[in-house]
Image (cartoon, rainbow, N blue to C red; front, side, top):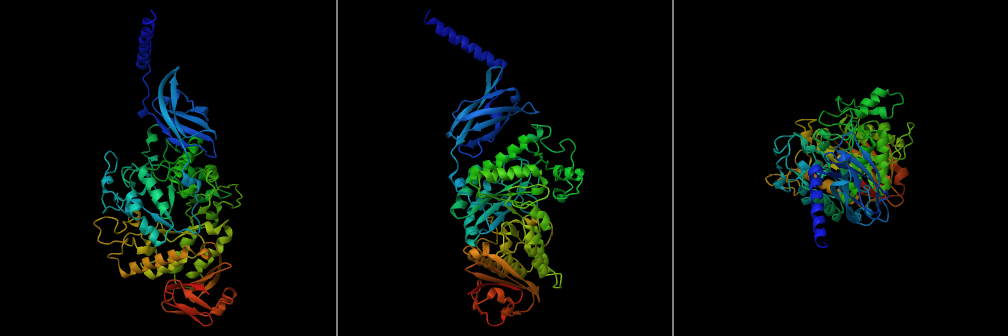
Length: 624
């Protein structure tokens, strides 16, 4: 009897388990999506909220047993297929994995193995980008095709590669960036900003990356997560900081959750599609109507880009945690946040400050496309605003200065046009909390190429680069600007603005990386950029020094960067002939300096007689 009873019990238990499976079919691991998929111990914020997605999971009760980790609260969503779990990860928690079990009516119907890791050592030493850096902005699909095997991925909505189609995919990828880190580093850049590398599984024009369809997945046509990690690691090894291009305002219309939203208000205007009015000034306007404010932040960019409602606290937490997940996973130095003023302001405060609290050395730059410095200044940390907004955004993109630069170099010289535009734009720095943290640039992926802006004049491009790389701020150079890429055939055409870097494909006849086949002008501008960038690396006076400028006169503009040890004089001469400058005009800053050395050409100038500045050029002089 003693031997028979255990056998009978085993049979009875088997029957009970079988009936449990028959009447309560389990949710398999494949049907459960948990985000973030993993986390880390030792984070400053011990709270972690998991999004769990699976058929009928909303009626399940989660449980776990792991030292230092507890479930604080469970939230059901509007959809029965979601569950949100608030976890507390105490400082005592150790790295390891544990199952989260999901039960219905006392029976386990599914489980998810969750992992807590030790923190990335790179993030513990994170140092964001600053005025000591120069950022190289890359369109990954158009930079270099390092792995042709991922050009076509079966099952994705856009699979064809067609380099003749401005808006089609061309095959550039993460491997292509990795393969050319030496070029980027040798040129003198210190940071790399690739446009978004996350999945954009859209039917067309998916190459640009701003219609994300999975915040946690690298687009397989670029590579995979291991490739992204390798890019981050190898960039660090070469002294290059990696910047993440974030998109919080909207996703792509084929995002996996669009067919089954967690909450009815997860997306703005989910049932009645409306376009944003793009009236960004409502964020600051004391007289703006409620309806205009509503349409601005809730309206969609285009029908293919649903606008996210960050007033939903679960979505807000999801987006913040996703950015932290990428920072920790890759050891990022910074984030460039797309379409900054289109998101809800309270959320932007929460998002930016949550990241900076976790990573005090980190950097965030926000895209506010305005030529009005009052609007740009509004978003920067430290700015005192009457509306009460006070986020933790270190930098904004200096669109006002970019616009002034183009006007200054292309307009005829009059008392109120030409170089005076640049002079007056810099005079607006008093509205910024910290001007040296502004991102300065001549062009980017959303506007005409600098060479096109400047009427295909390489001398003007050289003058523009001389200005951008010596003035206050954090310079950003768009890939190919250094070799005069242009879109003059189709001004405003985004596909052509993001054209292929020559030499990035094995059958290219021109090669910007080696210089093979480039014109004399292309080689000249590339050489100039390289020499200036590498000189700038060791010049504290440029990235930390003060600025003094003199009103433009006779088609020339002169400014100085100086500190207690060094003084650098920069002269822009727009004239078609050499310009003579009398040093005595600048006596207050030149003082007892006797000579000036040309940083690029090595020429030595005496400061006790007239300076002759070559026609249509920039002189960068170190005063001795």
